[in-house]
Image 1 (cartoon, rainbow, N blue to C red):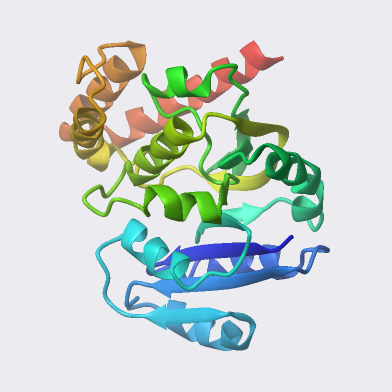
Image 2: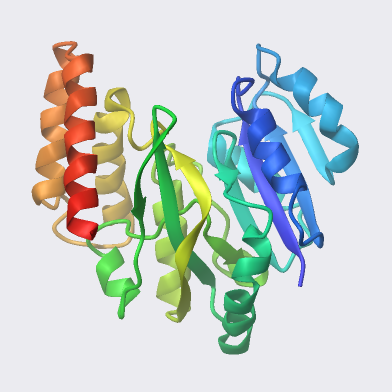
Length: 271
């Protein structure tokens, strides 16, 4: 079994070395690393050039966003399973890939398109919670919201080419769209009940400045797949609307405080 680990970067100098070292320190060695940089203006390119001999593919040039970058790498990948990492994500320990191997072998036996697990969530350099769970009928749950933790989600490369790559019309919810298409065509998935990826909060889908775009893209994604109602007015939607309002009046400190309280409440409920 061979992995293709695909990383998109842009002005990632603060976190990139940690991400790359977590990959190259793996005890399991049968993987390739493909990197697409979006023409960074900081020292990201210098860092990537220092590691270039260890990449099976590397390019730095302007692109149309993370999904466009990932697509470029997908078309050049050779692995059986694809793992996508943000440049601020990192594998939790040296046995991360070894630990997930039995679940990927089980997925191969049933021709599953996805193997997904939990994520260790990092905020302000502090481990705040673990997210991700198994769902008996994942397709039905995905009709309401994105519940697959995309960092640490392994995609069957052959089945991914069957349904098409990331839709670059989306800038934030392209992973949701892709996962929904995969699960709609191939309903069986495999879940592993632990974390192999630490995910740093503050990405595209959680930045308050991007929440309006996120909500608009969810509507477009639901329309694309004929999922009604186009806007689900649930507690999660209300929270995002509140955060948008707070952001517009520049209450950044209050927003951070709300996230801290939310994380503490979630941790208590999990204990």
